[in-house]
Image 1 (tube, rainbow, N blue to C red):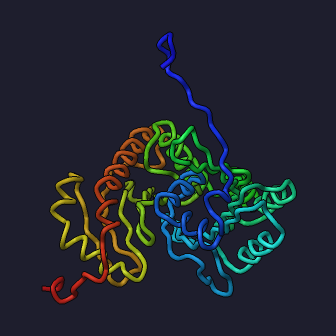
Image 2 (image 1 turned 30 degrees about the vertical axis):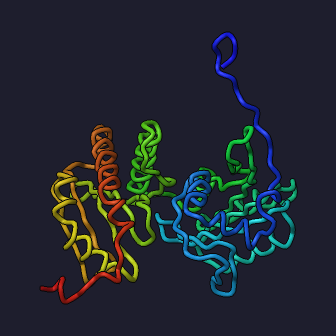
Image 3 (image 1 turned 90 degrees about the vertical axis):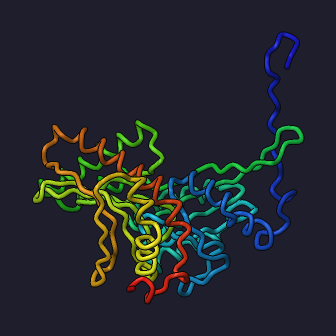
Length: 329
């Protein structure tokens, strides 16, 4: 405190990256792959990431850090440098994009040159929606003797709005598709205006929208059905462990889940399909724009409830604990 009672502010001091990490492979990459640090990076670019491996081959490629986007299960490849960007890493990133159908590539460096920033901006303009590039500069800061803190700054990112407009221009949307795009655009605006902790992706002209719940192959889905005149929110379980995960959730947590969510729930294993579901419905006509505020409020509340109740459980499920015989009994 100063003499007049005002709080004294500290002074930020920049810390050189090399003072903390002498090596990219032995220091910087393992630090970035730690859960809390990866979460900061993910929050910066608006994704929810689950670490898969470090220094991992992806087909013919090798990424510093390999993650899954828990919304759509697409690969997220992270390349990191302690120095400024260079042509070698740019070439690697272009090779990744050319060899993978759907991928997000994150390039982290101490500084981006103007040429490399322009190159990433250009790639984001010309690529299809399935390929996304982010350029991030990392800084280290300290106040006095406080712990050193890392900060990520976005220097280049995909322009989702531009891509959405461009994709629409390629083919005229039907009246139904236009309605769906408007529906999810309005819903995303509500979620952002209310600062919801459930993160929305870019709206698309389709009857569903996906939301991360913190684990790959598991996600929340909201959907609309103009024929049945209903809307729904459900937990979607996919992937190689979806059957064990479904039974572990159903057999071990059903009473807790139903008591906490307090909505009519339908448990759907769907053994002949590609996913299992835990779903709840609301009767409403998605084509009736006058009722969108009511529909969106219900959808927001339901998504937040599902995320709050199911998220911690889903993250703790261990497929190796599943006993088919016990479940069948």
